[in-house]
Amino acid sequence: FRDNLVLLEEAASTNLTLKELAAKGAPEGTAVFCERQSAGRGRLGRSFHSPAGEGIYLSVLLRPRGELTQAAALTSLAGVCVAQAIEDVCGLAPGIKWVNDVQVGGKKVCGILIESVIENGVPAWLVLGIGINVNNDPSAFPPELQEVATSLRAEAGQPFERERLAAALLDRLEESYRGFPQNLPLIRQECRRRMVTLGQRVVIRSQEECGVFLAEDIDEQFGLIVRDANGERQTLRSGEVSVRMA
Ligand code: BTN
Image (cartoon, rainbow, N blue to C red; front, side, top):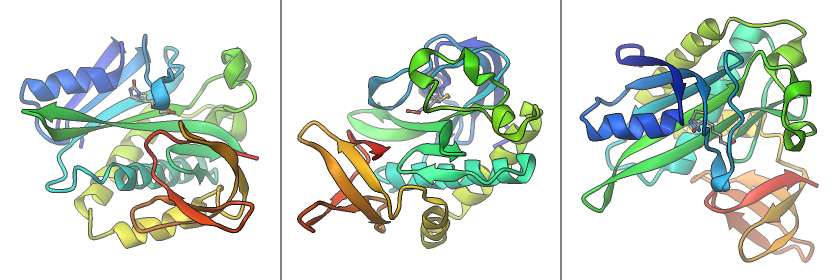
């Protein structure tokens, strides 16, 4: 993923930039970084706070042959890679909150958003977007993030070289993606080991319902298996579900 790097001062959203590059014939593995995003996107139509010089805002173009429906698995693969890169470079012990957040000390340091690019009515590419709060001062976060988000700098008490972390992350992603999908059992194992959600009561909000469940496990498609107060089990797919710790 280091062969086709695009480094930008500013983008509305690196996911958007990469979708445009894909339409112009950019090869698989093209990676776009920027210093700041003016319209960083998160899941469920949310925005991703992306101030200049403090974070890593990265998108990578993927074309997993025959596996374009595997967005949940790839989100988990990316989450594991982010957690490992942070551990290697920053010496912190990150956890994963299903499905797309990486946390340190119970607060979010990274969000992951996979979007597909449709060509001729079928998904042709996946854009893997990763945003990491590296050197931010959390007291400058917008009010809605104050309680829920943090930065690597705040958690470790020291700043980090973003380039080093970004390089470690690209290498982890490339290696892991090369092994995909055969390595999914291994990814699932690592994901479960790091999953802060498992064994916890979680509040699930979707279009249909809202309630408190016990998060038990993740299945082979990386869905979250939960149990309700009556002991009934169901499996949540990532789509339109928001999960927070109860
Ligand atoms: C989330 O937390 O809901 C997902 C956040 C994903 C943020 C990254 S930053 C790089 C890429 N470009 C975007 O606009 N979003 C992703």
